[in-house]
Image (cartoon, rainbow, N blue to C red):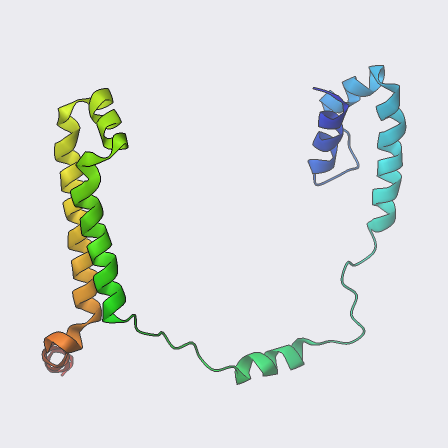
Length: 156
């Protein structure tokens, strides 16, 4: 370790009152660090009592009032065209994967047995994508009202 490593090790500690053992050993042979560490200690001790963000008045009330006035976050719906485009990109990447140079490298490195797990993972990815699309567009499928009625009956 060099001088910078020892000094950074010293500065990373929460308490600067005690020197780490390795730094003490380093100080026995390094005159530069013997001068620099006491100077650092003196400077850090001078800043110890100063609060970094001194405010003239308590601002918590005004901040909380402005937070309470804020409108709640409303989640916007993703348009169907974006869903369809991203689905086509996902399907296209699955179909074009066998022709990719990286896929050839994977086959050369791991053999042909890698194709089956990869196909299963890609099938799960497209199934998850379709499930998310269907769940977010239940109104379009006419299922939302049926689900609401079933939940209302169970609640009674």
